[in-house]
Amino acid sequence: TDIQVLLKEADSCMTALAQYDEMLAPIQKRLENIKAQIKEYAQSQFRDGDKKVELASEKTVWTLSKTITTTVDKKKLEKDKLLEKYSTQTESYRLTSKEAKE
Image 1 (cartoon, helix red, strand yellow):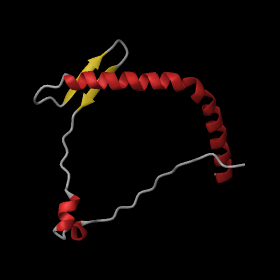
Image 2 (cartoon, one colour; image 1 turned 120 degrees about the vertical axis):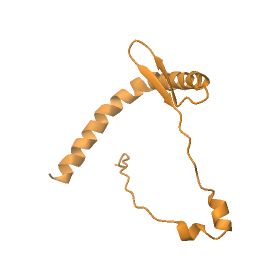
Image 3 (tube, one colour; image 1 turned 45 degrees about the horizontal axis):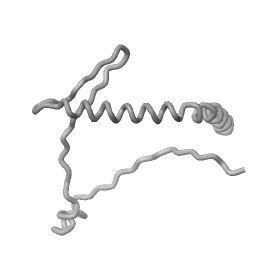
Image 4 (cartoon, helix red, strand yellow; image 1 turned 180 degrees about the vertical axis):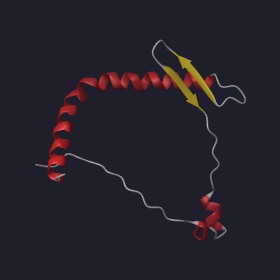
C-alpha cells in the first residue's frame, strides 16, 4: 500500500469528522458532566468488600470498578541508593497527528 494514499485518505476522514466536532461539542460536554455525577453517585454506593457497583438504565449498564494498587516509593528507593539498581527501561510507540501548516 502506498503510504501517501493512506495519508491522503486519513486527511479526508479527519476533515469529515471535524465537521461534526463543533456540532457534538455541547452534547459531549454535557455527557462528561453526567458521567461525573453518575461516578460520584456510584462511588457513594460502595460498601466494604465491594469491587464494583452497577447502575442500569433502559439502554446502558454503568459499572464503576474499584481497584487497589500498590506502588513503590521512588524517593525512598533513591535515598537508599536502590532505584538505579532495580530500574528497567521499556520501549513504547505512540502515533499522534496534528494539522499540517499550509
